[in-house]
Image (cartoon, rainbow, N blue to C red; front, side, top):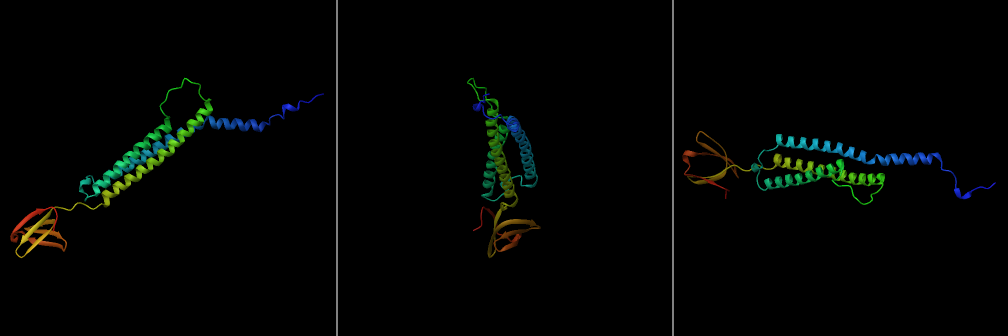
Length: 205
């Protein structure tokens, strides 16, 4: 009786079960990543829509009401938010649906290996898309904050010359022939009937 020692020991059943389980995980990896990307895309879109709506309701509608240079700062923040949001949307769409491509004529990789590589690419796009979308949200919040807390543009300034003095400041209001100005010394009320000249100026000396 002879024994074939070169054949080696038979494969244990748990090895086969483990290999089959790993194959199943790899086979469904791409679908799981794309399903997660679709969920993240929907959530990020809802977050940005809520932020935009909140900013339109609560913020100033005209950034021209801000004092310089805050309109420029707000514009730069909004531009950066648009760029980050566009990049994030592109990455999330690529993660959820893949990149547009045609099937190559050359021999391709086995199906499971090709899906694994595509899942890795989709996961990278998902992470980039989430990061870019969160950056877009932060930039939108910063832009809305500048419209809330940025200093407003001063009202028209008037130079009022009256006997013995000259006053200059922004107009607070006019009531019954009395003009109230906000000057460096505080609010001053001037009788318009006693004023010699009233001139609009861009800034007070």
